[in-house]
Image 1 (spheres, protein in one colour):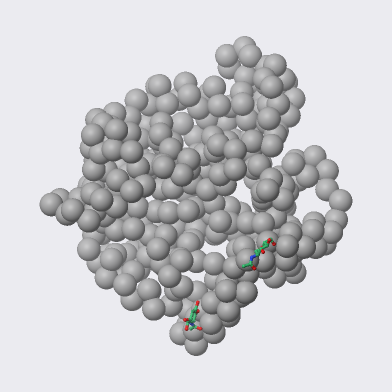
Image 2: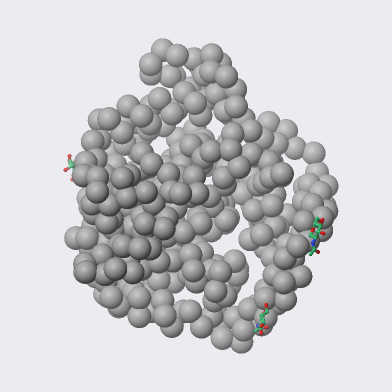
Length: 330
Ligand SMILES: *[C@@H]1O[C@H](CO)[C@@H](O)[C@H](O)[C@H]1NC(C)=O
Ligand SMILES: *[C@@H]1O[C@H](CO)[C@@H](O)[C@H](O)[C@H]1NC(C)=O
Ligand SMILES: *[C@@H]1O[C@H](CO)[C@@H](O)[C@H](O)[C@H]1NC(C)=O
Ligand SMILES: *[C@@H]1O[C@H](CO)[C@@H](O)[C@H](O)[C@H]1NC(C)=O
């Protein structure tokens, strides 16, 4: 199913909106306004209520009940906090959401996706993890939708899930979120966008990686995106709205300043207004991903017989650092 230019633009904006919004069901107007009020009130209410949040985390923990294995490892306090945040601190809704994720993780096994299975998706460098973090220590995923040249939606999604897991693996202690740099160069509204794939992708991100995306920079997007986004603005609280930045670098001082405020220019590729030449080297990136698989195996405690490690180093030899994956919030 391929949409018209207009509907693909709308679906992408809607996707972004869903992804970044705390609301479960964005729009229609009345609901959005109610939600906005409620959120506004509860936001003020929460402003300084770390004790109450602590209590909610414990409540959710009790509601979920005893866990074991990878589910136990997944459900750190910081993780519970993200699910609560995504469901406006409603324990019942958060529990439901978290249970869905645990079910999804045990079927889809995102931590077991192997690089060699999805590497073909990355050959053009359409999505990869940057070798720098933003000023807040967030991992950065670089996306260049114009470089799409594969056709299996399932594998495209697995590739993205692999990279999101990898981004999480590479977060510094105390940081839970990532940043996306999306370069629309070479992308046109006529590019085939499967709405189903966009939906499936958004559903996974929204349902199973809540509060993981701190900010998305849309670099050189078609102007129509921004027009849509400005309309969407009226349905969003400013916190959510602030998460999407439109960046038009040409002769635009504000854009340059904006990028500088989030990134060290020394790190940033020229394509994103920095001073580094961006050269995606698929072989080198593949080597890095393969090395990270060792780290992943260590974190999740894989049986190395199930998980053949290509460079001969067993996951068990690595210092286990399960807490690094999702450090508990203080
Ligand atoms: C949201 O809260 C601010 C104060 O923090 C207040 O000025 C504003 O009127 C509130 N908006 C709504 C829609 O309740
Ligand atoms: C905010 O919360 C902390 C810890 O709960 C407390 O020590 C502090 O006094 C609170 N501040 C205000 C302004 O309520
Ligand atoms: C995608 O592009 C890469 C790099 O140019 C190329 O090696 C690969 O064969 C292409 N894949 C497909 C399916 O066209
Ligand atoms: C876009 O989709 C149409 C219909 O599925 C297909 O015929 C066409 O080859 C696709 N174009 C590209 C560039 O993939």
